[in-house]
Image (cartoon, rainbow over all chains, first blue to last red; front, side, top):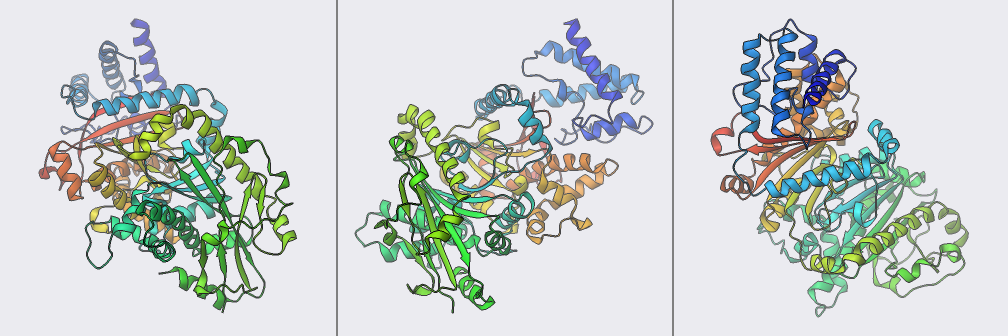
Length: 337
Length: 303
């Protein structure tokens, strides 16, 4: 136990002395230790602490540490605070107790989420052990920056994470997930979220491929096929979002006979919606530019988890020199409603 | 008047047996599959191909090539880069199918009927922070929304894709937990912090990250003496908390939280040292709503 204590104390001191150079140290702690003459900032308050300004104690909590070493850590913190002359020893004890009190509240009550949260912890620890620590070179590079090859649009559906289905590793794909994997047409005010992602991926990250992946049994597409769009609305936001896929619905209804089962109609609509999204991507000037310069390519995909299949198709985009501005405007006109 | 023909042709890579044949004979054969006629998007309702603009879909598949337009040499030249990515993705999917799908077939068949995720996760689109990778979510466990800088705009901002997904997850799927995951070195937050310096000139990004402005203001208020990188870190965490509070502006979310049916959590993934910090929002009623900060509980730090 004493070695643990010593280790903890030395960690604190290392943090204190090399505060400036340690990137991982929490910013507010750095400020405290450097400005020993100033009054303690309003981080440690009487009310529960806000997440962002973190007390120094937290980096020392390991998942296998018991309560005993926690008490020791408290003692070590107290010592540090007193030794650095930041706070008077008595006040330091009081402050430390405040932190402890805040941290140990709500321990007793079993919430519905505690089991779920345990699941997260296991997941993260597994990731760290099996992947992060086994590939230090890769993750070291990733910590400095990212240069993904792909930008993927996938549905938020829990069953279609592209990291699973396409075995994408960290750093490979900039992934946007939303309901029914839709890409709306260019609109800076209404659809700034998706626009920001496409802009960032194409102009800043310089991805080479944009892949839009639809899937079977999509709730969003089922919604757009079911909602009447006759002026009434039953949801706050969903109908407004999935109406981006209305051209796909119209096409589906035009092509399928009335006897086609609803499920099959949805399947057709799911695939057509991918094409609508690909078409909408063309309404972004930087996407068009990338396509013309051949720095960018567009692909559509469809993951059918009922049958375990994946379809992939590419979009080939070519312009002849005689294309005029008027021609482009006509195409956009088709797409914008 | 430009008319363009937008065609797409499909081929399913559904069989492991098709894995063996490679794409070497792709350019050789010219086959016109009846599938092409099934789905065509036509501009301005006209079939006629205008030479000024042509959009054609190109499909690569084992042993089968579909060349829908007459100029073969042009196609051959342009598809030189394309096969690499096609093959790569196909290979990835087939390994997923072999290693995971087929070995858990019953589970996947069950999932095909319905999804019952317990989590809804809002994460950044950053390629390094896929929640399935870092938190180990398996298919069926988490409904995931990914956008730039994992922002949740408040109710009064109007419809966005994020709140459409929230509505679906909370009201239809009835998830039990909402988790907003932020991360270190976030480009979106950096853009937010750089806004007035005009480093961010692209207005799309500006229009989106402006939803995080309260976080930026708070950061400037308490951390202005830190250097830019440290301020960004502070802002990353601050914006997670702002997003958590914005979640409570949605009446159907607030109602479920008060009833105890829904928990709201924040998470921060630091990939410089691979640590994860997680906390839960402690919300009892409307008295806390008007304050600019919120209380948290069950804070954990995993390293």
